[in-house]
Image 1 (tube, helix red, strand yellow):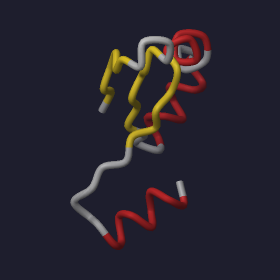
Image 2 (image 1 turned 120 degrees about the horizontal axis):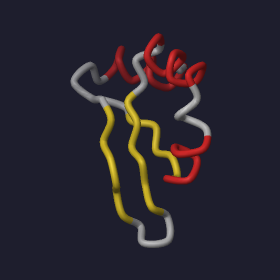
Image 3 (image 1 turned 120 degrees about the vertical axis):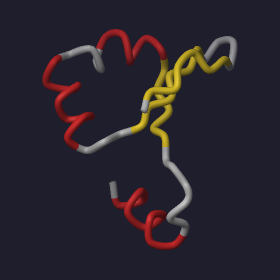
Image 4 (image 1 turned 90 degrees about the vertical axis):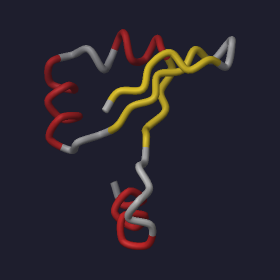
Length: 60
């Protein structure tokens, strides 16, 4: 959060995405409580398949 706020002050046109492993997204970020926190904090997510180094989803 601190990094995102600092970037918004110095480079307001940038968007910061939190990159997460696909299994973490499926097992952790699908929880209702976590989804609420993501929404409240307006987090942008980048879901990555680490083994193939492939981006699976950009979530705004």
